[in-house]
Length: 562
Image (cartoon, helix red, strand yellow):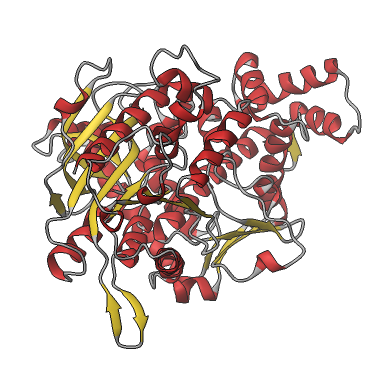
């Protein structure tokens, strides 16, 4: 759809996002679609018009390599070989003989049913579906690009580069020279330089499959070529059970009940509860690491050196030692079995041994009044509402008997895209507003920018936009959010959903205290307004250690001093 004289690029992009979501909802209700059919083409054209920053050169003839790596880390290995992709709910596949495939950067169970079919379990709600369908649409666009470059002579023959790549991949053993030649042919197929192709090859290589990138290119091209030459089209389907269950909080309710049952069993349900949405290491390490590892780090220059060491993959022994100390001092770990993929840690501050914790409670507090910290792993999009909404409901002791939780505070730490700054910088929101609507949620944040000054990080304070998906943003929309009277300092996916649940429980349902304390703080995973600084440019590495622990420590200081 072309640009008209009366529309800005930001308005066109907003319309494209709206079309994507309307189409996705329609296809979900319908139950299936074909990527090269009319509906699939609608998704493709909307994504091409939007041209998200994370997908780089999606609208160009050449292949987009960084975007490809990004989505492959979030989709199951082998999906490029599958003609049929079935999105399901948790339907018991875990009890079968099939081993689940879990993507590197997104916790979701996927099952390779046979050579042609991949099943992907959806337990995180609509945000998960939007995320997957957007990634798949990108994958199909890139697949079609390969077919466009490979097919010649009215689609009856393939170019020499493709034939040579195919010949190399058919060999059981390949020499280094043959591998390099295959990469040269692949570079021409993709419209990319040899050095770019080699860099992507190295990123995707695994011990099990060093030639994974070559195989991915081959299968993406093969299925697109077969679609054109044989009419065997790829198809996306949504299971009947998924369509029936979506939106009913089945997984969130199961998750919340498991946690409340555990709290009840340990006599913690009536204690002051502080909810922290973070990761599964920063709170535990902040509470115990400095003292637990005093022998290993006798000359540590502050805690940051210890935290950086704990973040390194090779230091599992250090992590295990801290975990062991935490379990001896009141930590209860609940590994998720509900399907939400959100693990939980509960810290009972009445069970702290002498000199075990790095924080001190005020003197004279009775054990019954000592806080219980409930730490939950990151939720995903709309899942934030489902999980917190269910947890804040009263606990049913017996039929007709309810116990209201004594929730003192809710703290949210997360990663977000920053619109003025760089990776690792901080954002302290004063309000969340929801992309595509006028829904807005101002609140009093117990955290403020002044708490984080003079720490060597840029700190922004202001409004933040909760987006429908990180894969569906471009510079034009984000500049509008930043430059207009919305004055957004950053974008994330959960803020509105958390606050919606908190306000419903505290202001309307009255299931928790009305003056519950709320804390939000985010650190920048990327700056989507800067070329080369999007999420597709790679992870934070140790850059994320300092802001993660700085935020965690400020949250814990307020809890221990409240």
